[in-house]
Amino acid sequence: MHGIEVLAQGDTGWRYVRYGCAIMAACGIDMTGRLVGEHEPRLAEYYEAAISAMRDIDAPVLAVDRRFDGGALHFWERMIMPCRAADGTLRILAYVRPRGGREDLLATMFEASRDGMLVLRALRDPAGRFEDAEIVMANERARAGLGENSESMEGLRLGALFRGAAAESLRARCRRVITQRSPERFELNLGPLHEGGDGGGLWHRITILPLDDGAVMSFSDISDLKNALIEAESARRALAREVELRRRLEGELRQLSLTDDLTGLANRRALERKLRQEVSRIRRYGGRFCVIAVDLDHFKKLNDTYGHPAGDEVLIAVGALFADETRRDVDLVARTGGEEFMIVTPDTGLEGALDLAERLRRRLGATPFQLGDQTARVTASFGVHEYVPREGHQGLIAAVDAALYRAKNSGRNNVALPEGKRAIGQG
Figure (cartoon, rainbow, N blue to C red):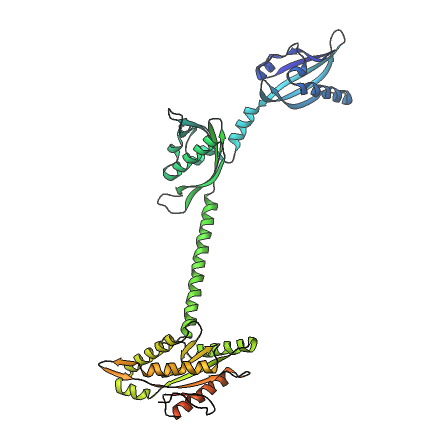
């Protein structure tokens, strides 16, 4: 559809001498006899610029412009040429062809979109409350993505295209968009990607914007990306669980390597590690600590009399007694041999260690052990030694062992110190 515009220049500006029927049909208005700037002020400036350009290049001008005609935006192609009337007055002849309006542009963009797009209209109950949304328009991408054709989609409700929780979520979001005039952008799981539930979920990224008493919804399939992210997160969690399990098992193995199998107390390896830690701590920060060595008296005789299982029960009970009488969060009680124990007492001087050893000796001697239908009494010899500055942990163990031997050589069931110092609590 083409049209002709003829303009004449008068005292008040350019005026339409002829306004073609095709142009009137396109913009809905007849401008014949009226000033160019009356309907669109900027158009007068546009023609002045075109005439100036024609004078500069001495040739017609082909131009594409946009104008608001009759309240709508239109795009026009114009071939503008100067001419003169029979009386010699200057005229402008414009050969005009409409290139389409805003609606055409929007329709083209709607169909060309890489996202599926739906134009929705609100459906309301007699009281005006939102019930659902009806599809007014759907582009080709939406029809392909939802497996529908244009005839079957338009007029359908959202609930007819989506099922279950997905339909309820979409309805709720459409209600918020339409009633609150606020956009919604979200990701939605529409269910299994394939029948049978295998292969991940069908995910869409969705945007809903308000439009009059309805909305525009755009959506794109992000299933591949979303399922890949879900699989990556699942793999990350599985790896984290595996790492945590391995860390826990390694911790348990370390603990087992430091634990006596029979009594559950620390073993000799744990004792030596504790001694090295205390020696290092005192060399750096100062302080005191002591070691107590314990040997159960005549334990071989107890094993021979009651049997080794009974002897094991006694060792377990003695270990529990020592643990109960010491500071669980500070002191270390270790079983270092068959019937031998050692106790490390951090932040404790010699007097305190002697008091602890004597208390343990008395408590042990006063405790009956039920072995089958018989009751046995057990005593022990104790050696006590306080750490001496610059003494290594091996020298420390040798010194407390020497104190223990003195206790045993002094008649057993007593507490002794190194270097022949007076034993206490004998008998």
